Image 1 (cartoon, rainbow, N blue to C red):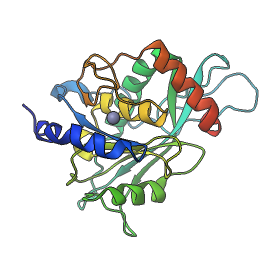
Image 2: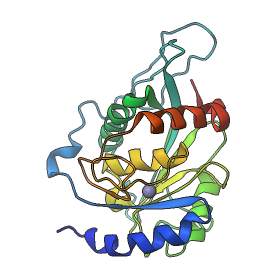
Image 3: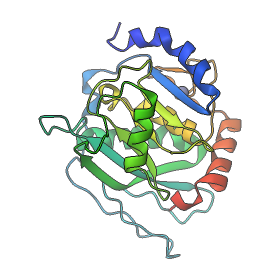
Image 4: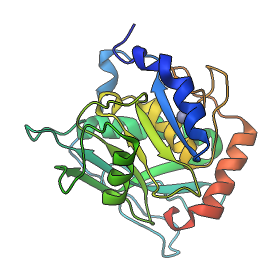
Length: 244
Ligand SMILES: [Zn+2]
């Protein structure tokens, strides 16, 4: 089916092995059509804000902000890191990053949660950071290199992984925090939305229609009310400094 399908066969085993560590992996179930990356407003970082005037306004580094002043809605700040390959080409384009943000926000708005990109960096890996991880520890090295405690890290590698997953995220309680995404699926928004689900404390469920299914299809987008409640509670308990 897809170049990524081969990894799915190993997903269940890897998930079982790793849940004990409070982390979780993900594989991609289906690649979207080639037209998915047609982002409308690339290259034009637009300011956000105009909002509640309560001192929490921020200006998004890329794309639109989500601060609304509505206390029932969560606006969570991302740090979006895109690695560059040996030819200095970023793993995904700014247009793809913006398309990811739009799709993630569409999915997570089911829970009253949306995201803005407060920090956007295209980086050349250095200092022991690998763009092609072959061991889980290298994903921690990536998180340690780019993560901070005021934004939710989404790091996209520039190379393919020799691991039985396309993405990996530490759940609350198992630092270093952050979602690391294989470059090959860096523009596949459902997988990133899924990783954010882990970041917000959600475990896997067995239902292909749901976002937290271990294998992510383009139609795996549903979140239950219980998951929404848990995700919002996770923000309150663990990620308050990321709320804008
Ligand atoms: Zn997962």
